[in-house]
Image 1 (tube, rainbow, N blue to C red):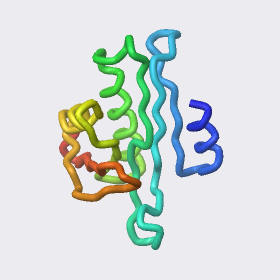
Image 2: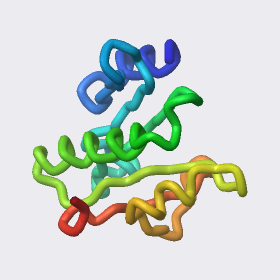
Image 3: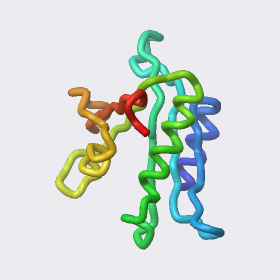
Image 4: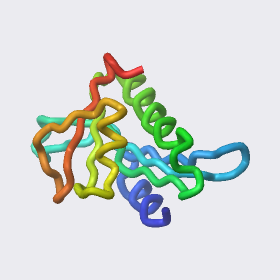
Length: 124
C-alpha cells in the first residue's frame, strides 16, 4: 500500500486512492486512475481501476464488487461511460472475477497485462 500511496501522490489528480472498511476494520484498498492519457498522444483518455487489494479473510464477501462499483460510480460522476482494468493473465489471476462483473476483453495488452473494459451504461 505504501507504493500505491506514493504513486497516488506522484500522479496527483489522476489517482483516486481509497481504503475499504468493514465497520472499523480496513479490509481492502483500491486505487483508480481518472482521465489518464492512455496512449501518451493526447488522443485516448481513460479511467478505471488501477489497483485492488482485499485481505484474504474478506475475499468472497463482496468487497471486490463494492470496490468496482465505487470506481464505476466515480467514473460515471465524471461523465464517462466506460471504465477499464488491467490484470496479470494466468489461471490464478482475477480474470474470472472481472469477467463475471461484465468486463470484456479489449484485445489489448498493457505492460504485459490483459486490458478489460466495462460498459457503464449497462452496469448496475
